[in-house]
Structure formats: C-alpha cells, structure tokens
Image (cartoon, rainbow, N blue to C red):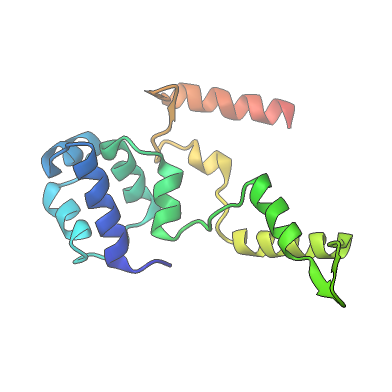
Length: 156
C-alpha cells in the first residue's frame, strides 16, 4: 500500500495537469470538492475503489491506473518485463551464464499469481451498476453492461 499522502499528491497533480478545479472534478465525478481536497492533502485515507472510480470519471483517467496507484492492484508486469526478469535470473556459475530453467519460469509465474491473489476483480462485479465503465470514450449503460455479461456467459 502506498503512503496516503502519495495518492493524494498524485490525484492533485493529475487534476492540475488537466487544468481542472476541485469543483469541476467533483461535479463530473459526483463527489464533493471538500472531500477531494481532503484526499489531495492527505487528511483522508486512501479511498475505497467505488470512490476511486468516481475520481477516475472526474479526472478522466483510467480507473485501473488509479487503483494501482492507490495500492489496490499490484503493478502487473508486461510480457517484455517478465522476459527481462527471466533473463535477469540467470545465475553466474563459474563464470558462465546459466539459462533460466522451466522451474525458474514457473516460480516467477507463481510469484506473479501470489501478488495478484485477493486483488483481482470479478469482471461481473465491475459491470454492475455500481461502477462507471467507459468504452471508446463513452460510458456503458446498464443495458450494455447486461449484454456484455450475457455475451461472456455464452462464450465462456
């Protein structure tokens, strides 16, 4: 978990970078501007995911990025980063590099899975009416969310 004030500083910097006032962010996200100010100044603890979702709307920033910054999600490694890690895991044995074994790779995957444990969101929950989700710059309606769930149920 990051330090509370770090999340607030991050939110404040995002808001300023976008040239938005506290009132503008509050209105767009459905929050009060004093509450956002308290978050920015470290007078409130890191908000729950539902509030972070509203902040993401008000700031027009990716929800998952804010969740990661708030410490709710671990930084998920990209394929290139995992490959780099595997290469880095090579050990020097008598002056020679030893290739990472399949066991080394499995261990790294297990570590990534452990990092995600308890922090993975249920996709159906994200599509509930409690969260705002954008696709191609537009918010999904409750009906669109239901259709996505039906689509997923059909194909999975």
